Length: 565
DNA sequence: GCCGTTTTCGGCCCGACTGTTTTCAGTCG
Image (cartoon, rainbow, N blue to C red; front, side, top):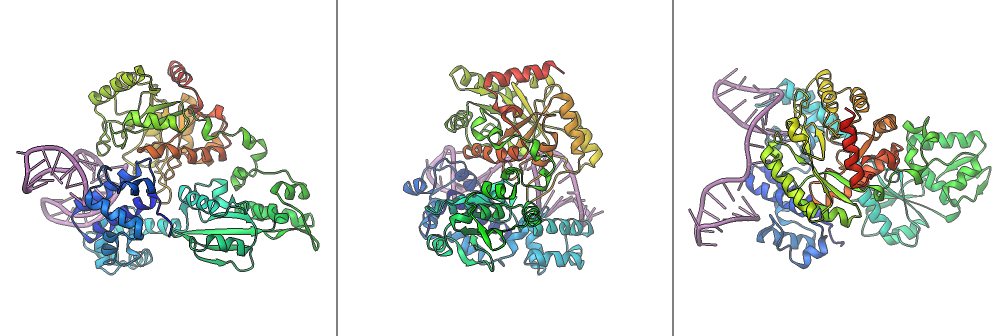
């Protein structure tokens, strides 16, 4: 049995909290599990180091939980979770993903006979939900809509999840030249399957993955083995070296691109499939994707640009080697600390950013309206500012900022004279998600046009696989950013990836973007990777990304931006 | 379940919104 990653420990603790909530246990007990999960998430060490010290000395993890975690690592079972989960139908926890449903409502639904998403959909349609105590026609309609969203989303994973699994596969397939394929290779924001390709045979793959991939089995008529890892669908496609190029192309997706390429090949008298490029009965030698394209007389299209949205524009976009990379990011701006709802101090966040090879950190804690996130009053903001200036004097490369709430009317949560003291300002929406499109648009346009706003944070508020954008004319907001010289955030958190890369692709060259992690924990700074993948799909070069500037250049940029307004 | 501590047990983030109620429970950020 493999050692569970720290991420799966976090997942197990969160799941325990969810189950306890639905069972109606002491809410503070479940909160303890949840805050222990947050605490583990924020650590830099992984499971072996934590096990070595018996999970001792971790904030919010006491003797009892430390013991449970040790047992979990050793046996793969979390006693508290198994005991609690045994009392629930297995499909019931999926209801937690439905917006508007919390533990209490889920319990009520369960008591009325609902035990799965499908059951809930049926109960909404039949009118049973609307008749339940505490529910009504409006909530039944909204629940139905959200259930459909979740049922659709259930087919997909966040990019971070898919990449974690796919990279674990790569590590377990040494000697077979393993490479990423499919959605994870193209860096799509959500993925259906964690897919890799190898040079070899089904036997080679099986020998290396037995015991790691569950239910590993051949896919009919394809050179592919499929299974699951932690419930995530995986596929490993294999081919001899001579046809590896065709395999990589065909397993590289998207479906749209693959089908178009097959059709073009057919027109030219070829047959292209995962088993190779054929002309008549002859299988052509195509060890690489480039070889296939050369035989077909077609230009090579980089994986980043293989979505339908790229069809008309990709030849005009920069070559992959010109696109922004993680190593181009010099500043990690829009980050949180213990001053608001982060788990690490400013000094620790800065040290971590430097360890990761970046040059400076920008603070960006929540403003006073964000009570739930321990948002900073003006007095606390100014105290934080003093701490930042002291750290700067001690040589820590920082810039001082804040993530300031955009209020309902589009004004900001701090007065201008306070904002002016900051080195930069990120303005974000965290409330009033349900305004109609016209008011929401006016609100964001007003904020984006504010003379002291540097960056518009996560512009649509979407949470991938959970909820879409609030109602909004996004192009009107982007136009306002272009007019005011306001930078648009590509929030790199794998659950947001907001603004969408398709929008960035469309507005590329007209507005500047910032790839921001919005990190609340030390490990969150590494999410920059996902934002970079989005920026690459949008065809962005370092010059189009604000935080590729040095600290001094960044400060100069903000000064010029303010002066121009 | 964790924490801080008056070292044994009480407190644990909180205001706004929604849809249901008929004064509020549940959810969200």
